Amino acid sequence: MAYTHLTESERYHIDEMLREGFLQSEIAANLGRSASTLSRELRRNIGKRGWRPKQAHELATERLHQRGLSNVSKVAEGAWEYAKNKLTAEQWSPEQITGRLQSEGKPSISHETIYQRILLDKLSGGSLFANLRCKKQRKKRYGKVSSGRGCIPNRRDIDERPDVVDNRNRLGDWEGDTVIGCHKGGAVIVTMVERKTRYAVVAKSKDKTTCSVTSCINRSMAQLAELVKTITLDNGKEFANHESLSSNLGCDVYFAKPYHSWERGLNENTNGLLRQYFPKKTKFDDISAEEIQIAVNKINNRPRKCLNYKTPAEEFSRLAAKKGIALRI
Image (cartoon, rainbow, N blue to C red):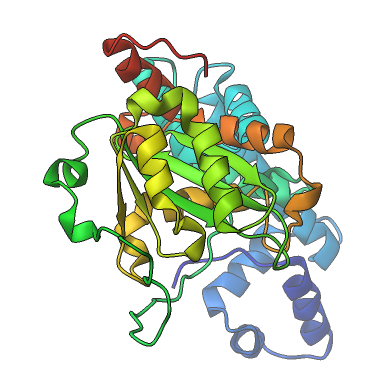
């Protein structure tokens, strides 16, 4: 079990039990702490008038703060300011910040130090931690055979998709999905993600009907039609008019197996990134296209480890330029 520092409430609990005459070993057992932890606490965080909980907590917090300052002082001036800016303005993860600095050959700061400073900031009442992506344990899905999903006319199964798509060796293979809002019948977000570069195109559809979603995809992908070879979708009925997509964009459309979301893992991950800005129960009718684009720009401009800490926007533009296509993204 990882060690955790004593909290302020634990220190007040220690004070109460000391006043009642309990032994240190008994107090430690009551807190679920080791006797050495309690002994060290009473020895190190003592003032002129003895050990007092409020003063002890202040001393311990200051010691943690100084330790954090010591770590940061070992890196180049400005690295922590760069890290804070990317964390708060762009919601980059500590790993992305460190990787990007290293890939550009700039003086870096370790992701462990960034996490430590975020913790210190939180202990001091700060809000840097709120910019970290919330990770929730995901429930494993199992395939269901009694569902109506997958009953799409003339659908082409993912098993028919060329192997080159799986290998991510070329630009132009996309995954698509919808992100629903707080109620049925309202606006939804349609997400399209390019498999090789992780570049995302996101737009709002007025509802989840086949007509609206199809129109939304055709409209948002029209300028990129030359860079669309395949699209892999889930089995929602909103994608029933896939033949229109194939005709308008000049691409092949495939469908993952029902309830096999891992076959579109990149798309599912991107939807999770969007939820950082638009949590569940968001009413998309009240979200403007500009607000959506701001969030998507932040996601497309985050460095990715799988891209050697280049951003999806950089890689998508670079590979498009190789094909003679200049993009403004």
